[in-house]
Length: 506
Image (cartoon, rainbow, N blue to C red):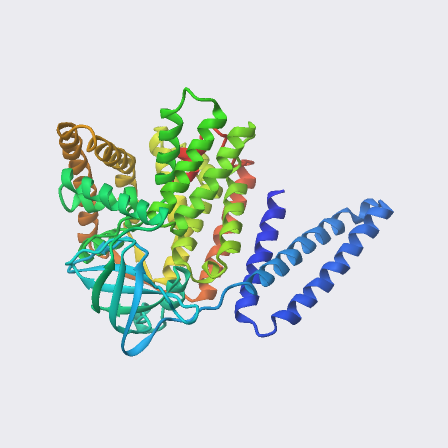
């Protein structure tokens, strides 16, 4: 069943790619439909004959049909993608817009996204860079005056080729940028549930900053709420040390929400607890904005909750593939341009497929089960994302494994402490100060490790590969994983009791 699901998803991915890049998409869909019809005929004829010699041929035909159906579904889905244009004006323009994202503070400015209120055509949103003050809030209606230009292109690999930054922004529904325009608040009231949740998120981040010292507070709010209000220097430190993934939203946030709700309402029937957990997860995703990594983890969490409700085993491999399928069908552009989705999926796939065989091999040399699990998980995620990082960003963090092994045990502690600080801020200032002090201490240890690793020689090396080179590397990694699985005869399956901490948290 899992192999059939993979083949179907590969077909959908191929169909989405064809629908976006090929000018002969219709002709290719017709050809695929003809091939599927032929293979379907072969299946029915083979089944009618009931000849053993046709079993393997029938299986191949079934795989072909699944792939073809996936191609057609993916290609048809692209035809329903709403065409949008950037809201751009080279000369100064004036328009009213609603702030739809939480304003994030950078070194000397704030960044947020606005949506034009009365655009004549369907347009993308506009990303605005404004001075630190006055501070704006999500949900405010503002009058904006200035130039709205297409985003500047980021050039990695020493300028040899460009990262498709514009397409990446399109996956976030951003089509243009405005640098320090004139902004006047027209209406300061929030008008939707998401806007109220966004303001609540702002209040929670502010409360965390009251009791956790900077820059530890920026790290804590980034891990807990996905807030990226960090200095460029600190962001570069985490990138160089290979720890940038810890300051973005991930499945760990979803795991905290679910486990907290299940624990607090443990006196309720299972059905009601799962319903409450699902509701709060949806509210959390609306509040933080729904990044690709969170959507992937959320989909996996819902599959896990459903498995818990039905009393069925939670198969992480199947959940990963199904969640990926749901995301690319919902947002087809994410398949080819959303680097955060790619990294999240690759890292999780590495954990799901490679952790168990690696653990079996390394358990001879590492007797501590916790350290063994931590090391194999980090190793699997690192090598699963390495070829993509080399191709897309042209860099290699040589000490990322060491940094992650040192830091990862502290991440759940920091997130839990940050969560407690936020909760205590509504009840006791003394307890908030106490937990905030401990949170600051643990966060500073993470910052210390990141800076030490950054200071090491050759901590970040430029090393780019071609697309073909990336494919060859992944082919080699896949063959190695298959070999290890066959050698150890292992299957990776996580039961409903362990899925929250073993898979979703990454």
